Amino acid sequence: MPFSIVQNDITKMTTDAIVNAANSSLAPGGGVCGAIFAAAGYQQMDRACRAIGHCEVGQAAVTPGFALPAKYVIHAVGPVWRGGEQGEPALLRSCYRSALALAKEKRCRSIAFPLISSGIYGYPKGEALAVAVEAIRSYLEREEMEIVLVVFDKAAVDIGQERFARLTAYIDDHYVETHALHRQPTEASFIRRQEEEQADKAPFLPPPPMSAQMPMAAPAAADSAPKRKRRTLAELLDRLDESFSRMLLRLIDQRGLTDTAVYKRANIDRKLFSKLRQDSYHPSKATAIALAIALELNLGETKDLLGRAGYALSPSNKSDVIVMYFIENGSYDIYEINEALFAFDQRLLGA
Image (cartoon, one colour):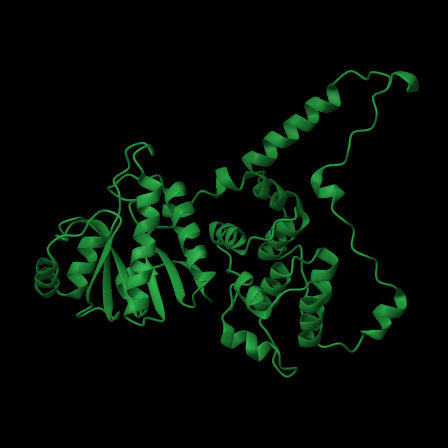
């Protein structure tokens, strides 16, 4: 898939290039930097970096990968966190952009990043992740490349309890864990249930007379969205034999989208999408769901599309429950959904 998050040792990545979280002098350091120097061959890497000499914060430089599986190491100099008011987000975005520009210049088809500046430079991990995803998303909107964000320690991006608190409560209420007879309630669901109990204890107040009631409020933005026309029984019966690929192409046309927009929104590459146009090709479940997300299908439409490929959404599958949560809430950002799936140890959507 074009973008993924994995837990791994970046020095073991077999991408065309890996990124080193470097310092301005390109000197060997600790953490990711020290590990890359050691794995590449300390003397060779040190000699190559000394030849470059210096790299400004927010910029990047490239050396060979030497003994690493990757052909190139791109040394990106991230900012030190000083509270966020010293231009740190812009400098961090510039790191990713500069590294990606160098990778393109070297004709790399794949690159692996660490979470730059989130170690000894003190950049808050959640904010560092948001900047990384934003920069990568922006790049992939106009370019083709496989980009991997590599975290050595799962805790580096383990922000699920705060960022995905509502999702955690939704999973607790909807996920049917087949082999567990008893589930411990999450903190989020416990708090929500306490709020519901307090609401139940509130004294009952009779409604005011009709003449005194306020006019009905306008519906929320999500509810005021135009409703999609219900399909007639005849239309459903007419499409009983419609294949996955035919349904996919029909939906793309109905929504006035281009193939490029759809496969980029779905986090799949162009080659795979060309295969999906063939009736004989059978997609994986992760790919089929990603396409439903790209098309912004509602839950019923998503189930229809998955059914054409022989799949279903199940409450006994945690990944499916997470997907259902986002669809029911009208959130179709594949990057955010994949962050949530990663936080809950589930397979990412896409190829």
